[in-house]
Image (cartoon, rainbow, N blue to C red; front, side, top):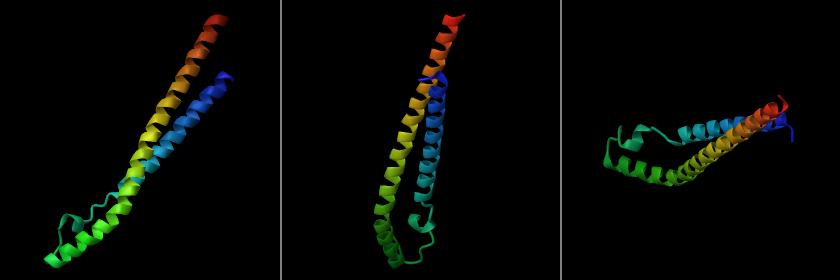
Length: 103
C-alpha cells in the first residue's frame, strides 16, 4: 500500500465520520422537541393536559428509538474519526521513517 493512499483513506474516513456525526446531531436536534405543550404551558384545562400527556407518550416511543439510534450513530462516528486519525498518523510516521532512511 502506498503512503499517499493511506493518507487518502484516512482523510476519506475522517470526512465520512464528520458527515455521519453531522447527520446524527441533526437527527438528535430534530427529535428533541421544545413544544410548549410538552412542558404543560399553554394548557387551559386538566382534560387538555391529560390528552396531551397521552399523545406525547404514544409519540415518545418513536422518538426514543430515533433518538437512541442517533446517539449510537454519533458515538460510531466518533470512533470512526479516531480510527481515521490514527491511520493518518501512522501514514505520517511511515513517511517520516522512509524519508529518514533515504536521507
